[in-house]
Image (cartoon, rainbow over the protein chains, first blue to last red):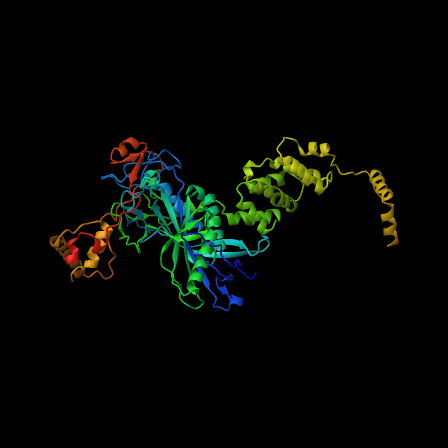
Length: 507
Length: 108
């Protein structure tokens, strides 16, 4: 199949409010499968190639923090989940959490990375109120995993009928500490600091600039999110700050070197990620075409205005003065071959042991669904994408004689659209798989028509506790099977429409 | 070589250290000279060592909750607090630029 790419076309960007630039003018730019630009055509100007890379921070799903024994939990009383080490009191030392290392290894393996059997910890220095130590422990020189890849799919058109597969290279995955949280109180000109989050384990996943538009970035992050959730290494809920994405964006003309890139932060959802990236690409193109230059700066995405604005507090290029973390020896991982004979089990992490126990990744689940039920790849995407939908679908299939290929239509078109309209999750559905299977059985046995079935579903949606059969009887939706009765009805119709009958007979 | 004023200014910004006077800068110069003697050793083909701990085993802790829940104690250290939050200035207060702050580096 020809990789036609995301087909994203930029037209006039929305006018941005005060404080942000306002890109104007028509610009039609499409990116194709190879990340190149298609000539703009009408405008006659040289085409632009957008380049997008991502840095994703995923909070590790663990009971305690990366280097201390305080609890990891969202929304607890301020500073209640903080140990002396997290508060950076003198005399405290980091002690590495085994579970965090396993989570990073699992994630590295799932993303086809080489796991570094020896990785190192470093200090990254900068001052900020939510970083009590004045440095973050990270892995700058030799991270735990490198050189992987993530395959994701997107639909070329809006109708979900043509999907194309893309790959983005994973540069590395590193373990690092999260910082605390700052609450800005502008009225009293102060910042309130909560260190509950300080020291929580993070996996930073660095994606190479292989993407070319917001849609690709969003699809890649969505797939990563599904993988992390399947592995259990991170719950990756963006709304709770468990998954944070920074985008690096630049544009250049084909054949020329990469342009200056900007970093875009403060992106709070996958939808906003696509918007932020596309806005920034558009802004840079406009700026350059008007003879301006792009600054190598950090910008924040303003979701209300739909634009990116320069971030305050970022004075030029930061010098982090990286140095080795003197309190931590190298992290050594083993595999079946290098397993040491006389070492305490608890102190050994075996990469092969972890590899053998990896669960089925989303791509594997999708392939299985297609093979087992004969549904289309696009359908499998939607099933795996919606939490609980695969289970729902399989439950219905198991309780009905209707073929899965027909069931899928009811799941994706009828059920899912109802859920979306009312902003409900599958788990919150007033129609259970049992009820839907019941309804589909009536349809399959030709006891009701397809139109009637839709009416029954609408009734079931009200969640009044009636069964499909009860609703059918109540609304008299039964299909008439009796031949004689059908003839009588037809005759009555013909009798009642004499003129029309004459017209039909005359041709 | 002497350490330039630009580097000294950069260090004062980054580390919030105050070289204070010519003697402070001279001490820094001497420290660099002392460390530079490491260049006299031929290290071709030798893996850099960054810690005498490099052969030690990195201890792995079990993922149990064993600490925390000491809000009161931690806040004892805070000069100012608001409802169990630490209080900090609204943002980083950067060191004023070379021409705008009182520093002997100006004269150098």
